[in-house]
Length: 187
Image (cartoon, rainbow, N blue to C red; front, side):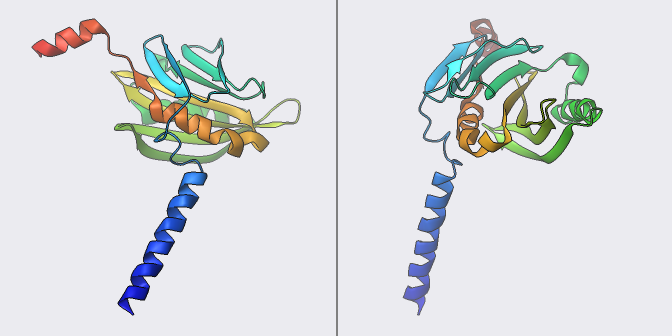
């Protein structure tokens, strides 16, 4: 009887691991892709994506899916007027979004990414042309600066590009300035 329960437990765990793996949750653990390494940040992004230019305020990096021009990930340093706490900054941003009738909040959770507290806010914007874009904003504070990593994609593409976003977020790091490293030796 006990052996049967153990075998059943093992089978359930194996099925669960495969389900999690194929859902993209472990994408950043088995990270492979191109590496972005500029503007004091580094991260990996999908092999079939490319670097992009962003005109958004505070942009430090952007990558996009060349096969879907409506899909991109922009990394911004959050302006100081949003506050110095990620929860406050995210709330201030949500208030701005809510002023427009085209905003639908889906989910907001507090979590940890690479040992940093993060807030992940998922929402939909109804575009002027009638289409809907899904956005996922991951707010993090690193090296005393706040960053938001923003995925923007058509709603119908979200599941397809989610693993690419997970790869970017899971590998995102601030590059240490060599002067800071020297100062840290004396502190």
